[in-house]
Structures are given as C-alpha cells and as structure tokens.
Image (cartoon, rainbow, N blue to C red; front, side, top):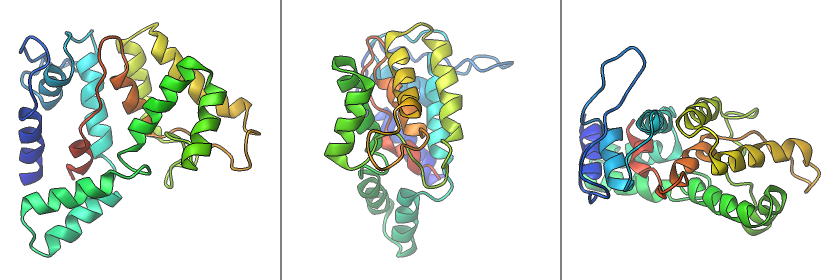
Length: 219
C-alpha cells in the first residue's frame, strides 16, 4: 500500500506538461477510467493529447514493468526495508540499483540506439552500441532467452495507438536486424526485452519522455 501511494505521489509531484486535463484510460469492455496513474502521468510528460489507445499503452507499460517478480531493484528495496530503514531510504536503495544499464537505464540506451539508427542504420547502431557498452541495449534477458513475452504485448498496443508511425517502423527494423545479421560479432543477439518497447513511448510524435523508474518497484 505504501509503495503504491509513493508511486502516485511521485507522479503528482511532476509539473503539468500540457493543458492540465488528465486523459481517461479506455480499456476493452469497461467504462472510461478517470484519474488513473497512467492518465495523470501522460498529462505530466506529454504536452499533447494522446491518440486513441495512447493511455492504454502507457498503462500497459506501467503494469508490465511492475510485473517482474523479484528484480534486482525490488530485492534492494526489500533488503533495505528488512533493516527497518525508512521508506525514503528504501526507495533510494531501489533507485540506485535500477540506474544500471542492465536494469532501468536500459531504456535510455535503447533510445540512443534508435536515434543512431535513424541517422545511420539498425546494423550500424547495434554494432556501435555493443562496442561502446559491451551489450546490445534492449536485447537479451536472463529469464527470457527467446525474448521477453511482455515486449510483444506492448509492441502490439503501440502499433495500435500509432499505426504507420515512422519511429515504430524503425523499432521493427531494429528488432528484426539481429535475425538476419547475427554474424556481426561473436556474441549472439538474443530476443528483445520489454525495455525495447517501453522506449517507443518516449519517441512517438511530439512526445519525448521516459517512463518513471518507480513503476518497476511497485512490488
């Protein structure tokens, strides 16, 4: 309960980016939902109104990022809490852990790869990222060797919300590139993980933002 309240408080602490109106969350077979975390977050991170399905994609990203069992950041929070550290200290422990490139910072590295791919090509962007970071941002997961199943769900929602979007086509090209060019380096490129698809929420037309890392620690 405390964790959920803190996530809500973190969203509320962000400045309003648009007209101040919180968009409703539309889910299948349900009446529109008001004042959801996803809707409030959109109003603070995106200056424009969302397309149909935009808030639903945001909501799905928050849920999928929270549904991670015992991730490193969650473990760090629980270790800190076990010593009776105060809530602020426990969250700080989680945020410190999630800042690593194998965890929360992966989405920022993926966005760099996408920006580089736009200027060059998917092949060049991935090879350069590997040479620079020693990993392929957005690919490979210790639990999902054949690709993160959450990524497929979010990708479908993003395509539904932004059909024909140029940057989404770029994401598709980036994902399919390894299957045809796995001879770039000695290490094989494993399937994409959810951070690959949380990132497109930061690059859709007119909206450049990243999902708050607190979503990953809601457990």
